[in-house]
View 1 (tube, rainbow, N blue to C red):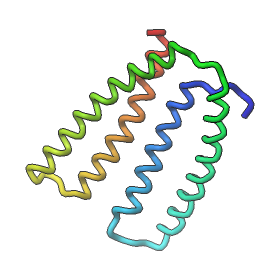
View 2 (cartoon, rainbow, N blue to C red):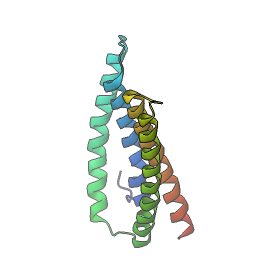
View 3 (cartoon, rainbow, N blue to C red):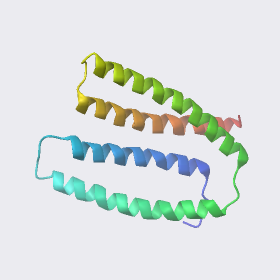
Length: 134
């Protein structure tokens, strides 16, 4: 873990944050129970703790390194595109709730799914922009 931390790595780990959010929402919103849910919950909690500790160390190392200005500008452009995508997704979900197409639980799953998709799309857009040097 002595390698240099890149902004691409930091952006890529946001996908893991989104997956953890989806797992925790599933744990909170489900209405049934099976015995193996305890094992899944414990595994997710242990993974979350270990991941946060390792990620805190990587972010601390990144803050000490020299920043790539072009990558930071590309990240800002990517975030602007991601914001527009998320606004459109939230409007669609809100409209679907307003006309009673989906209930509150499904709206929650749709929002968490939108966050997960946005994290993946954000990483892909950032990688494309960063590789082309836009």
